[in-house]
Image (tube, rainbow, N blue to C red; front, top):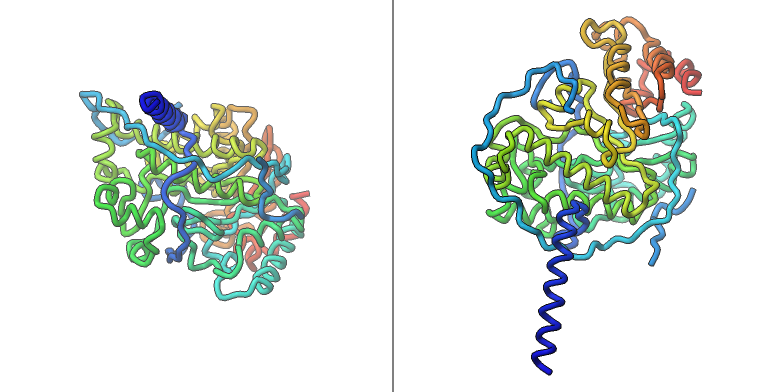
Length: 458
């Protein structure tokens, strides 16, 4: 009898190992590490880099009810050599059953997105030091203003530096987020009150500053990796005084997917949104030399990095769809697609022509009509050509933060925003526009054009 029992146990262990291997190979990784609840500090947000410069740093309840190519590049790619030998592929990582379940929430989304980015650095995102009533009142005011413009979608920062503005089992609680109530729960509820689609915006790879890392609670997954000499410098890398996740490792991609899974399964968000200015932060070979040596497999460093980013993005996409197939996944890349490909290692052209990566794309076409090398019209045409998959919505990102600045007709034409909206509407397959960002949209510099903007958004 003991021999039979031992044989049954052996068969069970082998079957579990096989199941874990399948999970890793599928890149649909939902669970890693221990639950955490902690506080953290982060750096302030700045406007996106000038996209003309080629650079290497460039109402329902808000909680979900659960149920039992290469780019058309004109910029020269950094040179690299190929590995002469094929190295071992990553070993199988054992994972536990993800603490999520499928969602039947029917998201609010529109055939034409009229969106506004709300960044973590804007005051309306901050809930710390406020009562829930105070915060709810502020959010009501902000969302009612957005609704009054004719906009129907908000992309709201919920994780910007490996911190969370919601109750997370994996990421540190942001110092900007209240400990007495769930900030995301309030934002979702109020957005739906106004009929707004709310997309949870995360930066998947960007982490905190080195000083903020020191103050992070020991229970945070990232802090555990920071304190582990075998993972610090590999899973997480300090570059320029800021920590970044390294997507070369299956465990890292799994953690990123875990974070996406808990948002989609626990909250009635209407989409997941990322901006790829914060993928690979550098072209320096030192960033991931150890991982490349172990996993490079003969690919050039830069092709290998693109493969890692592809794996991360496709895993995020599948994670979302496995929980709720109706939830869209969107990405906002730099308007200069050669920068995406050559310096951020984001093969956006591939993602926009192949199924399984994204549902909508919001290129940051942050130029004026009269720009001498990257005019607004020519860039719109370029991106219309990049989005080859008819199932992917093309939304044009607009730079309200540039109105009134010294760049060409952003300075001379106070009505440039409404004119760019009207032009975008003429593009074949027009999928909408999005404004970067809230504070700039409702600034004095844009106010003169607001009535025209409202008319154009009808």
